[in-house]
Image (tube, rainbow over all chains, first blue to last red; front, side, top):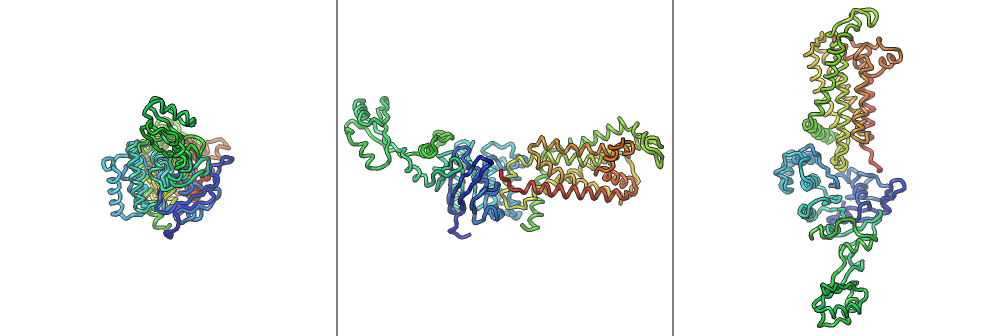
Length: 318
Length: 271
């Protein structure tokens, strides 16, 4: 594999179950050492993509290369390069945390000493030392997820698939997991993650693909996606009610809040648009103003025609 | 994937399955208890009557000959009970295989570059060891109840080898049944025929005593040559042609079970 070869190359991926089309011609390229987030509501096809790329599921059509290997012709090559942490915990609940890690180390054919060292380091890193010799079935959700990820990392994959890695985690565990992902990327690992959380894609991803109904409806950096939708606004704070009323009359498209003395007007982010808003405002009646850009919530709404099903930003501390 | 890695991965998976067996002892206890209950039931409840119906040494007509007592009946059914023990543990293998397939770690194994069939090999080797343990416990119980034999070391060695072969073949079959089952409940039902079939064989009463039709079935089903061979080996008699028939059945069942299980496990699902 050369340095210039993308970690994931997908062209024309389709998958259907009977009449139900799950993936309808997905094209995807993820350069090495970057984080790509697949963002989409439940049923958009996120997990199906991960399952196909990780050789768990056969595609109907498409050219798919992962870590330089064709998923259909050389699944062994793909498997040797990847690590997967899925939506459902892929741990052995009857084994202890230490035994689970040891199992993975043995299956990666690490030598005895190397395996023991790797197990110790990962138990430490994932804060599982105290629970190392307890059966995994006694672990909390967050501990199971940490063990799951540790089991993926002990195999030293160059490419990691994370399918909704933080679903069901408390805010603190979620941020711990984000830190771990960032550390991996700093080491040159490529990450493809799926998420329903707009915030998570914004925080982690170099590029974001918005998946809806089995199609990538938009792709780009978080900033590019935000610019694509007219979700920006200018909010003006007034000193007294009369000034607010006058401005509100001049801008019928705006939303006014009489109690807070604010007026919120849609803006497309351009200077000309901003100037139009400001024209006609009386300087002495204005206490201050803020220019806000669209957030991914607006992007999602605009691109998919509906609000994200996931809990929005208030449940995910930034 | 080299052979060395296949062996190493299979050993790793065997360790995993042995840990499972140790962590979930109630299943093993239940599987061993069942044949012991049948042994006690048949020897102490039915044994007096059934023993009297056994053909005596070189006696004439079945059901009339020299007859025997409870002790003779114990000797008569012990081979059948031992093979029922193997079948009983094999039933447990279907359950544990099906349970394992519902866990997320199997999906993880499928995304790893390991000898894929090692997941199954681990189950089979673990199950064969568990069967060995169960058979030893049940055999010890039979001795406790008064089972004695004139078999020499060669006979016992042959009996052990035959039991391992039967365990191996029934285990591959039940691994397949466990993989094919759509739920753990199904997996605990489909292999029940394996525990029932020894009743319609030469294991509990001589087949001569059965009505025509049933008798033909009993004489030709796979458990009968297995039980007859085992009985001959542990009583110091000559198994004759039954030995080859028993080995043939075992090899056939093992091969079909292996190929079926492998196919079920290795296919990349399309849905």
